[in-house]
Image (tube, rainbow, N blue to C red; front, side, top):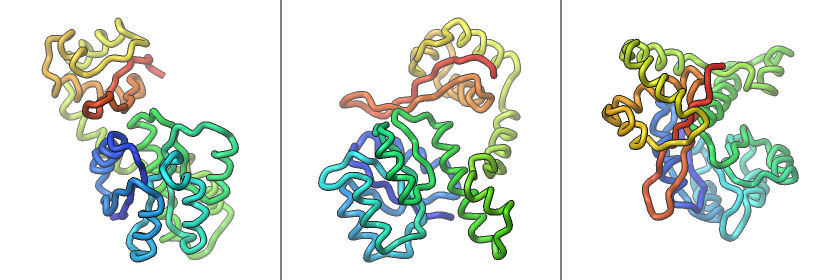
Length: 235
């Protein structure tokens, strides 16, 4: 189990991240901060508690890069995944220089977040299990995205597959194919198909695991976090 803190000033994005973290059995949320200075103070008092920070760039008081600069003065080991709308090369490069684990651009998909967590998981297990660093081990450390730990995702897909009805899957796929390239909320798809939102979501999630459907998480102004589904076709 890895302990996670969120450093993000947008409450809606925090709600999305908190819900998403709950999907991963290996992660436990132990802190949620709106300002970098508050997170740094907490980490100073609890230096060994957190294993992973999910960090934004645009925050009041200090940027994500300024946060990383302060963080690395005292904590070289904690892993960081930056999730931000900052798409400038200078920001990305600076974050890399401070040893981040991954850099995810908003709006992000649940699939991309899963990749980031899998990358983190691979790095942490490699560090814990490696005593002699061979070239092969170094290659995995430098490019963990090529060696994702997929045990959990494969098990999850196997469980989901047992709950998938072939005829219903074909109907959902056919409906989504007629809407290819159109981004739709779950309620619209449910109403269009005449199926419950629970059923539709299960099959859309399955199609997402097959790489046919993109799922984007975003916040409606003044509303609850939403999932938007888009059929992109089979790979």
